[in-house]
Image (tube, rainbow, N blue to C red; front, side, top):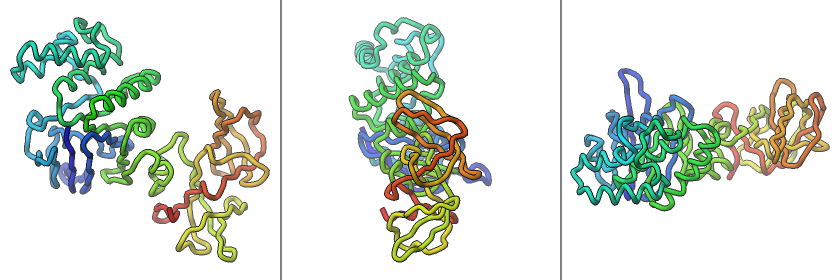
Length: 356
């Protein structure tokens, strides 16, 4: 396998720049996920790595070799697409063998590679079937098998699970991750689903409007989002973001939210009267005997936990309760959170203010 280096890469369509000087390093054997909302440029960037899109500026290298001007066939990559891209008139075996035959490999070697990949992916019973006779998950496995038999230096996945139902997505997530651990393959994976990103990635790259917002491990992004966008995008349900104004009392600070003062963690360069956004994860905003007054609007029991959607003033908040509860719509409650769990963002710049 190989290291992938993306250095100051730009992409311009006409007068519109869609990728802005991005730099990402994918280490040998690492599973990196590009995540962001639709239109953020993640698939365009993946296609530039694959050689399916030209590069306006910057450099992309694979295994230390610059590939800017190389066609896809010479980059030693394999790509798995959202729509599977299988030949409907060919069997599973023929689909997997096609690229190897084009390279002129020996028939026995092709057979060996197909059998090995089919065994890994659980496709052995389906080698003589046509794509129309397979389920969505099986078709996606065939697409992955077609990539595996090529034994590429880098695997590229472009939203491969978006066409599958929820239960199958969970299953395929685990299978792709297990496959990566077995092959130790360098992988660049694109998705708009942050749950996929959190559960699969060694490293996540959060993108918005062609820019990188933050790069880090799943827990780094969850525990220490660098700005309001990452805080709201990573995590399900999303982080509560509440406007407030800082109040200084001696050497400590509190924040006033809807007439209620909450103590803040120690933060350098905080000033009295500063407008901030207080971020708190739903599982860390819990009902208690003091805190922010709110009215229960919706109660959503999920079995293992209960989601409370509440309103405080004009602000809608979400609280996730692990224990069984008996809250009812219209009930008045108080919500609080430990100050160590609060994420503080500047209202003007949206940047994180916490010292950690």
